[in-house]
Image 1 (cartoon, rainbow, N blue to C red):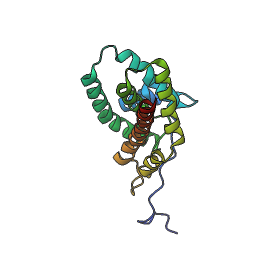
Image 2 (cartoon, helix red, strand yellow):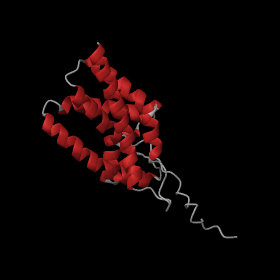
Image 3 (tube, one colour):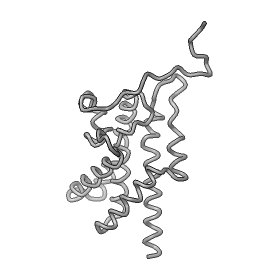
Image 4 (cartoon, rainbow, N blue to C red):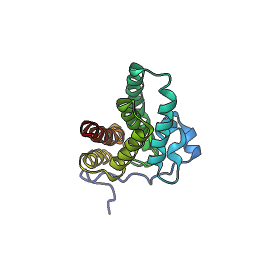
Length: 186
């Protein structure tokens, strides 16, 4: 009996790995993709990553102007694409929940574009973003599902790495749209 996959049937991926401190420290891409440890949270790593993004934004915003934020987000996206791809490949999962760099970039962008905002406004942005990222309504669900499947060779590649970032970017856009509508009618 031939057990080799047919051209229509990609080979199975190796069993998924679990991220831990040893994994985090094993490669620079892991540290970035796991949000410097925020993604190791056993409960709601995406929420913890978003909280880390909020805290780091408050700290960094004291020293960064708009041009520097734009450059940081652009560089963070390029480096994050690489880091998320490598980390997903090493975890043998197309979009592991421990990867939170996507939440970090998306929430930094939200805060950067909506500032100045009161702490209550920032909290509302946090809640909206977490809703869109977790519930994945409409376009966020489409974006999330669009890039999940591994290549036909059965391995995780750049497309899946892009997809990790893409659905959170769509969630950020949805969040900003709701905030813009709210500001317009309020």
